[in-house]
Length: 374
Image 1: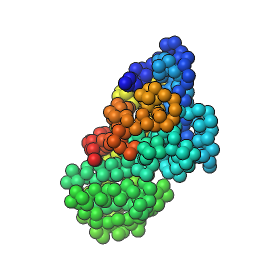
Image 2: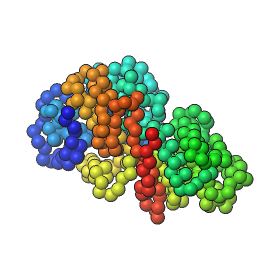
Image 3: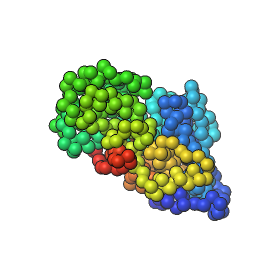
Image 4: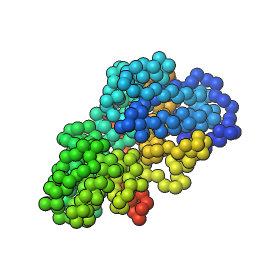
């Protein structure tokens, strides 16, 4: 079967295109959440995908078929936005990362239209039987990798911050970290609660930690960048300056790279970008063409891969029927995406991807390890 040549598409010159594709369009629907909680990834993602479609069309499309992209904001009614995209004729959907909107989308499609929840790590949103797919690793892989990295550093004691056991993302990631850390022989010496996106005063938690810390623990949470650095400052105020900090993809999304007092903080980005690599080059080309730099750079390849995987499914099945496209997606194996290798064959919709570990070293955000959790 023909595989998409991503590099060929990315190298397209919009000022010097090939003949315009004239076949029936491939229609990519994007049901995006532009709220304060998710907009930092869905807004730039919804700008990048149409640009990549322009590049693909500049290269002649796919088998002579142009790519069309329509963005619908889920707002207060994800079902209505989904119906709009389906009425338009979307062959597959790219959706928001959290269940609040993704589940109504799946209810509206009835499981017959492939949905790629591009930036999501929620394992509950992966279900190949209803055509719902993650494009990246899930919470268990991500936080298990963080735990393994800490153990590999010789750290045997952990302090964990959680919103509560089983709470999507802010509880599930800490749950997964604790399970993996303890399974690897580590000890969780303190579990503290906090409010995600809100808390910056950790004085009560810090007072408790100061009573038990040996100043050699790893501190793990799914907190945002400004929360982790605030916590660190308050712990250092208690003389706890020997702690190691590791977090989830939330740190990458919320700018741990530019936060003050970030030296040594580790995180699990979806892609580890270096100057001049193909993701960096793609984002630079977008900025040069559109006059805008995109935020949440580490997530952007996931949105592009979502489009390419859906199109690959259409190429593989030679069909436009959404259910048949979904069946073809379920058989994809070894797809070489911008965000890494993606396989759905033999899975329930979660690709078994390696997890990058980045760390702030001498002020630079650098890849220090790559860990695969099976």
